[in-house]
Image 1 (cartoon, rainbow, N blue to C red):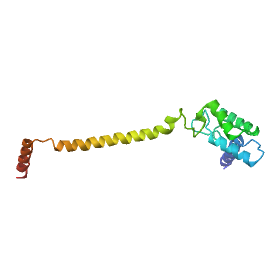
Image 2 (image 1 turned 120 degrees about the vertical axis):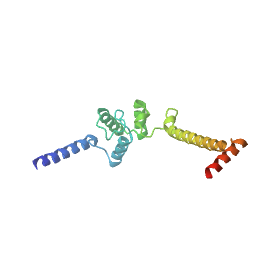
Image 3 (image 1 turned 120 degrees about the horizontal axis):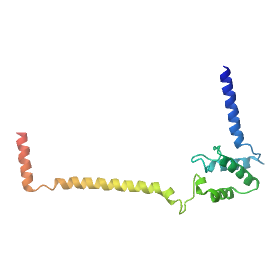
Image 4 (image 1 turned 30 degrees about the vertical axis):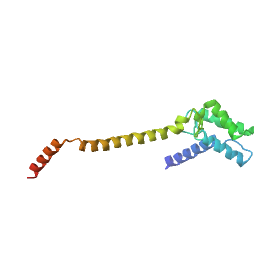
Amino acid sequence: MKVLIHAVLLTVALIGNVQAAIDAYEFRNDAERERYRTLVEELRCPKCQNQNIADSNAPIAMDLRREIYRMLQEGQSDDQIVDYLVDRYGDFVRYNPPVNAKTLLLWYGPVALLVIGFFVLAMILVRRRSGAAAASHTLSEAERARLAQLLDKKDS
Protein backbone atom coordinates (compact mmCIF):
# COMPACT_ATOMS: atom_id res chain seq x y z
CA MET A 1 0.00 0.00 0.00
CA LYS A 2 2.84 2.34 0.87
CA VAL A 3 4.45 1.70 -2.54
CA LEU A 4 1.18 2.56 -4.30
CA ILE A 5 0.92 5.87 -2.43
CA HIS A 6 4.51 6.72 -3.34
CA ALA A 7 3.87 5.85 -6.98
CA VAL A 8 0.78 8.07 -7.11
CA LEU A 9 2.61 10.97 -5.47
CA LEU A 10 5.54 10.59 -7.87
CA THR A 11 3.19 10.55 -10.85
CA VAL A 12 1.38 13.68 -9.67
CA ALA A 13 4.72 15.42 -9.09
CA LEU A 14 5.97 14.51 -12.57
CA ILE A 15 2.76 15.64 -14.23
CA GLY A 16 3.03 18.96 -12.42
CA ASN A 17 6.63 19.41 -13.61
CA VAL A 18 5.78 18.70 -17.22
CA GLN A 19 2.89 21.15 -17.16
CA ALA A 20 5.00 23.75 -15.38
CA ALA A 21 7.70 23.56 -18.06
CA ILE A 22 5.18 24.67 -20.67
CA ASP A 23 2.90 27.02 -18.76
CA ALA A 24 5.41 28.85 -16.57
CA TYR A 25 4.93 32.12 -18.43
CA GLU A 26 2.66 34.98 -17.41
CA PHE A 27 0.53 36.42 -20.18
CA ARG A 28 -1.27 39.75 -20.35
CA ASN A 29 -4.56 38.13 -21.40
CA ASP A 30 -6.13 34.88 -22.54
CA ALA A 31 -5.82 35.80 -26.22
CA GLU A 32 -2.04 36.06 -25.90
CA ARG A 33 -1.93 32.76 -24.00
CA GLU A 34 -3.94 31.14 -26.80
CA ARG A 35 -1.61 32.60 -29.46
CA TYR A 36 1.35 31.15 -27.57
CA ARG A 37 -0.32 27.75 -27.23
CA THR A 38 -1.24 27.70 -30.94
CA LEU A 39 2.30 28.61 -32.01
CA VAL A 40 4.07 26.03 -29.86
CA GLU A 41 1.64 23.32 -31.00
CA GLU A 42 1.92 24.22 -34.71
CA LEU A 43 5.72 24.30 -34.85
CA ARG A 44 7.90 21.19 -34.96
CA CYS A 45 10.90 20.71 -32.69
CA PRO A 46 14.11 20.79 -34.80
CA LYS A 47 15.64 17.97 -32.73
CA CYS A 48 12.60 15.73 -32.22
CA GLN A 49 11.43 14.55 -35.63
CA ASN A 50 7.70 14.21 -34.93
CA GLN A 51 7.00 16.30 -31.86
CA ASN A 52 5.83 19.85 -31.66
CA ILE A 53 7.59 22.39 -29.48
CA ALA A 54 4.91 22.12 -26.80
CA ASP A 55 5.36 18.37 -26.31
CA SER A 56 9.13 18.17 -26.61
CA ASN A 57 11.40 18.18 -23.58
CA ALA A 58 14.53 18.78 -25.67
CA PRO A 59 16.63 21.77 -24.59
CA ILE A 60 16.17 23.43 -27.99
CA ALA A 61 12.38 23.16 -27.62
CA MET A 62 12.59 24.85 -24.23
CA ASP A 63 14.69 27.62 -25.79
CA LEU A 64 12.20 28.02 -28.63
CA ARG A 65 9.26 28.24 -26.21
CA ARG A 66 11.15 30.95 -24.33
CA GLU A 67 11.96 32.75 -27.60
CA ILE A 68 8.33 32.60 -28.77
CA TYR A 69 7.20 33.99 -25.41
CA ARG A 70 9.75 36.83 -25.68
CA MET A 71 8.62 37.69 -29.19
CA LEU A 72 4.97 37.68 -28.12
CA GLN A 73 5.82 40.07 -25.29
CA GLU A 74 7.52 42.36 -27.81
CA GLY A 75 4.27 42.49 -29.77
CA GLN A 76 5.38 40.59 -32.85
CA SER A 77 2.71 38.94 -34.99
CA ASP A 78 2.35 35.19 -35.48
CA ASP A 79 3.66 35.52 -39.03
CA GLN A 80 6.76 37.38 -37.85
CA ILE A 81 7.46 34.70 -35.24
CA VAL A 82 6.99 31.85 -37.72
CA ASP A 83 9.12 33.65 -40.33
CA TYR A 84 11.90 34.10 -37.77
CA LEU A 85 11.89 30.39 -36.93
CA VAL A 86 11.72 29.38 -40.60
CA ASP A 87 14.67 31.66 -41.40
CA ARG A 88 16.62 30.05 -38.59
CA TYR A 89 15.62 26.37 -38.97
CA GLY A 90 14.07 26.09 -42.43
CA ASP A 91 10.62 24.91 -43.46
CA PHE A 92 11.16 21.77 -41.37
CA VAL A 93 9.81 23.58 -38.29
CA ARG A 94 6.41 23.90 -39.94
CA TYR A 95 4.03 20.97 -39.98
CA ASN A 96 2.41 22.48 -43.09
CA PRO A 97 5.22 23.96 -45.18
CA PRO A 98 4.28 26.38 -47.98
CA VAL A 99 4.15 25.26 -51.59
CA ASN A 100 7.32 26.56 -53.23
CA ALA A 101 10.15 25.28 -55.41
CA LYS A 102 11.81 23.52 -52.47
CA THR A 103 8.66 21.71 -51.34
CA LEU A 104 7.04 20.76 -54.66
CA LEU A 105 8.18 17.16 -54.36
CA LEU A 106 6.87 17.01 -50.80
CA TRP A 107 3.42 18.26 -51.79
CA TYR A 108 2.96 16.65 -55.20
CA GLY A 109 5.31 13.65 -55.07
CA PRO A 110 2.79 11.23 -53.52
CA VAL A 111 0.12 12.19 -56.06
CA ALA A 112 2.60 11.78 -58.92
CA LEU A 113 3.63 8.33 -57.64
CA LEU A 114 -0.04 7.32 -57.39
CA VAL A 115 -0.74 8.47 -60.97
CA ILE A 116 2.36 6.64 -62.24
CA GLY A 117 1.27 3.50 -60.38
CA PHE A 118 -2.20 3.59 -61.95
CA PHE A 119 -0.65 4.17 -65.39
CA VAL A 120 1.68 1.18 -64.99
CA LEU A 121 -1.21 -0.98 -63.76
CA ALA A 122 -3.36 0.07 -66.74
CA MET A 123 -0.50 -0.74 -69.16
CA ILE A 124 -0.04 -4.19 -67.62
CA LEU A 125 -3.77 -4.94 -67.88
CA VAL A 126 -3.95 -3.73 -71.48
CA ARG A 127 -0.94 -5.87 -72.47
CA ARG A 128 -2.39 -8.95 -70.79
CA ARG A 129 -5.75 -8.52 -72.53
CA SER A 130 -4.21 -7.87 -75.92
CA GLY A 131 -1.80 -10.79 -75.41
CA ALA A 132 -4.63 -13.18 -74.57
CA ALA A 133 -6.64 -12.00 -77.57
CA ALA A 134 -3.64 -12.28 -79.87
CA ALA A 135 -2.84 -15.78 -78.61
CA SER A 136 -6.31 -17.03 -79.54
CA HIS A 137 -5.97 -15.72 -83.12
CA THR A 138 -2.47 -17.03 -83.85
CA LEU A 139 -3.47 -20.60 -84.81
CA SER A 140 -3.33 -21.42 -88.49
CA GLU A 141 -6.05 -23.42 -90.23
CA ALA A 142 -3.95 -26.61 -90.07
CA GLU A 143 -3.38 -26.12 -86.34
CA ARG A 144 -7.08 -25.56 -85.74
CA ALA A 145 -7.98 -28.73 -87.65
CA ARG A 146 -5.40 -30.72 -85.69
CA LEU A 147 -6.74 -29.26 -82.42
CA ALA A 148 -10.28 -30.17 -83.38
CA GLN A 149 -9.16 -33.75 -84.13
CA LEU A 150 -7.45 -34.02 -80.75
CA LEU A 151 -10.48 -32.71 -78.94
CA ASP A 152 -12.77 -35.11 -80.81
CA LYS A 153 -10.55 -38.09 -79.89
CA LYS A 154 -10.60 -37.04 -76.25
CA ASP A 155 -14.42 -36.84 -76.18
CA SER A 156 -14.77 -40.31 -77.76
